[in-house]
Length: 489
RNA sequence: CGGGGUGUAGCGCAGCCUGGUAGCGCGCUACGUUCGGGACGUAGAGGUCGUGGGUUCGAAUCCCGCCACCCCGACCA
Image (cartoon, rainbow, N blue to C red):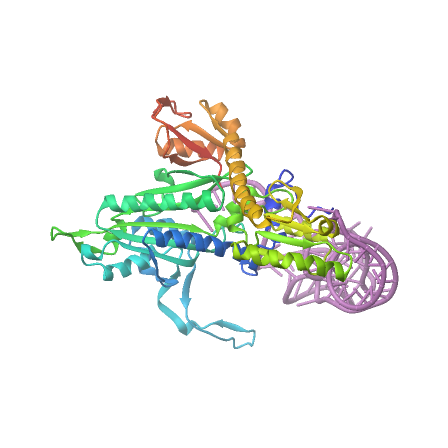
C-alpha cells in the first residue's frame, strides 16, 4: 500500500498539513494566510456549529449579526483593547477603483478616500458595545445575551491552516449584565459549555482554568480558557471566555438605571471558539493512516462497500444493503453506500480511512452465502465478521463505543504526558514531553523569564488546582498551588 | 517581520551546475481483463516551466525584482 501521508514521528507539522490536504478538509488559497475550507471539512464545521448553537440557545442566548467594518475611532476607545489588536488589523481606506491611465489594469482611485478608515473586525466588542449603548437603559433590558457567527481578520505574521489563519470563522458571544456576579457567572457558564462540547462532541479532554494577567484578552478583567493537548505534547487553547468588568461599558458609555433607581455601568462578557477547533480535532485523534473522527462530528458515520465480481452479484448485495441504509438513516445514523464502480474495494478502504469515517461495512459473496457482513472500526483499525441481523443496534452501540474510546485514548495520552516537576532542571528536560504542573510565584517577571528560557507559557491556573504549599520552580519564592506550563500553538 | 528552503501537467518529482525538440511516476480518457486492503495490459489526452523584467541568435536553465508556500525564530485565537 502506498504511503499517503508522512508519519507523525517523521515530521509532525508535515503530517498535519498533508493530512488536511489528503483528507480533503481544506487548502491554502491564493490569498496570503487565508484558507479554502473544502466541502468535507466544512461539513465537520457545520456539525460543530449546530451542536454549539444548540447549547447557546439552551443557555438563553440568541443570534444576531453586526457589521464586518469597524470605524477606526471605535477601536481606540478601550485603551488596552486597541493596544492588543492594533498590530494585526486590515484597514479599508478607499471605496472605489478605476482604470489605470497606462492601461495596466485597475488602481485605487485616490479621489475615493474614506473620511474615516474602517477596520476589518479582528473581534466585535467595540462595534457591539457601541450598539448596546442604544439598547440598554434599564435593568429590565438586562441581561442581554447575544451571540454572532462571523468571520474575523487578524493579520498574523505566520499562519497555519486552521490553527492560525488571517481570516477565520468563529462565534463570539457578547453579553451585558446588571451585576458583576451575574457576569462572572455567565463567563464561567460559557466556559463550561465549551468544555462540555470539547469533551462530549470532539472527544478532546480539556483543562479548565484562568489565564495569568499576561495572557489575558485585551480589555478583559479575567480570561478563562480550556486547554487541550495535541499528540506532539503541545497545548492548544481551544476556547476562551472573558469577564470584561465594566471596561467596555465605560468606554462606550453603556449605563442603566438599576432597581434602586441609580445610574450604573453594565457588566460584560465575551466568549468565542473558532475554526481552530478543527485543528484541535485533527491533531488530537488522527494517526499515520489519516483522520480519526469522533462519530458525533463525522459527516459520514458509516460507509458500506460492496465487493463483487458481476453485475448480478452487485444487485444481490444492493438488495440486502439498501433496506439497511434506510433503517440506519431512520435511526439517525449518517451512512454512505459506495457502490460506485470507479474504484476497487481496497482503494475505497484506504480512502475512507484517510477521511476518518468511524465505521466501515463490507459485504461480498462470502457474506451473501453466510448472512454476514464485515464490520471495521477506524479508531482501532480492527475488523470482524458479524451476522447481518441486528446490525442497526450493533452499529449504534459501536458508534457510542468509538466516541468514548477515542476520548479515553486522548485522556490517557494527556495523563501520560503530564508531569509534576519541582526543580527547574526537571522543568527544562520534561517540557519537551508535554504539560508540566509546577509551582509559580505569581509574578509576571517569573512567567516571562521561564518563557524566555524554555518557550513554555503558563497555559492556565487550573480550577481543580489542589491547594499546596510549595516554592516557585524558577524563583524559589513561596507558591500556593501548581499551574499548567506547556509549549503552545 | 528576520534566517533558510521550495515553486516544471491535477498530485509527487527529474531536468537547471555546463543555455539548443519539456520528461518520469501516480492520476485522467477509451477498451479489455480484474475486484475480500490503494489491480493489470494496450492506446491516448494533458504544460504561459510561480510571476514581471534583463542578458543572449536562442532561457525551465544565467542575472534582478515581486508573489506564494514550507521549516526555524519574534508576535498571536
